[in-house]
Length: 573
Picture 1 (cartoon, one colour):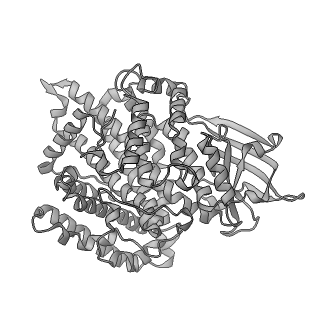
Picture 2 (tube, one colour):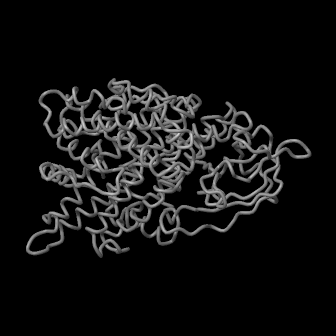
Picture 3 (tube, rainbow, N blue to C red):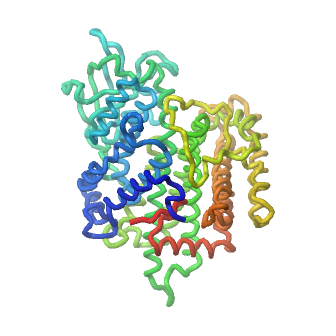
């Protein structure tokens, strides 16, 4: 299916222009191809030619809202564009672009008009902003962070403390610090402050040594220690004490978008694996004819489709039904990180000893496996995302899962006009609002009488499991909803994520039947629901043998014509 079925002409042309600028990654002479990228990785640096190309393209403008002079209008479009970069070099994707996005979304969400304009000006001039959150002593417990911005004796605020494992901190032009602005306990004790580094007294801060990493070697992970460094009291983003609230709202975009960008790593790795097995002869035939190999390849293909289906729903929901962002974003992070890491692990088994190669035509595979690892813990850990869903389960069970109405067309339609993303309008809880999971109740009927019986049974089973899940979640006691929830409660949250993903796949298929093409066929949906039937369990289920052949044929067709393996099937360079 052509990519322009999913994207309007403007963004489609920009993605095409970026692909053209970055060129064929397999060309050894390409200054931003795999050969150059692997060389930069060995040197633990971002590829200079890559940064120059992205500066020329003006990639940071894609993260600046259109009303501030940038090109950001839709979250799903940003994800699709960034996949063009991530499939080539995840280090450039994170180090050049996404680390800036992590800082910027906080300013778009809570900044004053002056702060928003200042950051927009900086980014449109190819500047960088870092998000300084992490303190190694506190991990994901941001409420315990000790870095402070407390009133100073001469007015204003004084920054004190350490921030660690922050990407691009040394290279950034501005920083968003998560800081304690009230020495007392409670949820109103922290704020975010936005400062230009040029305004900081250089005598008052020291950079900490760079952290070495196995993956994302080119990303500058560092830290800073600040001692009584004065800043203006107007540096605070939003009302003082609202730091945790701002974080919860702002990171709904990044927790949905960043894992979605990482599906491009699986795309490249699956392409490498296909190249390898189709060129390797075993027992008088190529390795791709071995049943175990074919099954593994098709499983990975289907997993990428599942991941992108849920991510598409979540990123579009930020525009269409923003109240649901507080549950969809952590669901994306939890499901995608798990499925992508497992799919990559299975591909390494097919690659065999070739997986370890750091030279040769398949060397990019080894880098992709290392660079994928942060998807499980970077930004926020999978476990923390699951924990954030638990307190919302009872209200979702009583309200959101009993609507029995189809999900909004705009979440899955091939072409959808979306309202602007209102960053300031994002909420910290859904209030039980969930138009996606509840749509499972009517999905079987909407498949129509011609749907295969196997598919109808799968959808009916998913709906029945959601009904049973609702009964269990509605009866959860307050003690079950805390950060020390039992294994059973966490299992319920994981089952909910699976239901969301299943519903996303069903709805995507239903919206594309009239368009025709691969997504309108039922084989991939049967395979996706089979894979998801065990997604929250300590087992895996292979794609059914009766649909494996057609899916493998589609995989080969895409590979041979240079198309992506995701739902857009974009033509790649």
